[in-house]
Image 1 (cartoon, rainbow, N blue to C red):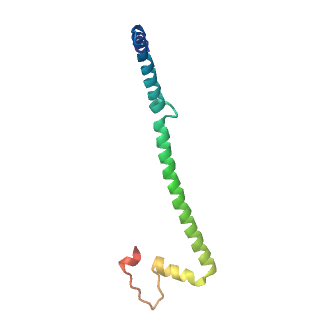
Image 2 (image 1 turned 90 degrees about the horizontal axis):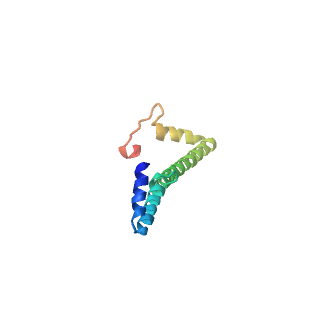
Image 3 (image 1 turned 30 degrees about the horizontal axis):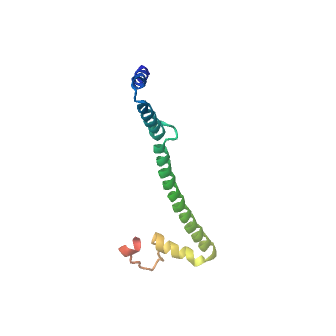
Length: 106
């Protein structure tokens, strides 16, 4: 703290009154830009985090819609259960052969 007082006294002793204002403005910019609780740096980081979380919300909303549609399909169509078991879990009937291609698994 003593160093700040001596620096300020040095600025006040000289006749260049503009130096005090330049230093004060620079100090204000540093505090607001980097050190403050609501600094511009933290606001930028929070905006990035908000954007990432928003895209995550959209992803899960699409996934929820898809799962809801599948559930509705299963409750309405009895053949859908067999189709999903065959496609997703590669299940088969006892006397049936299944050929799986690499393109089908992707």
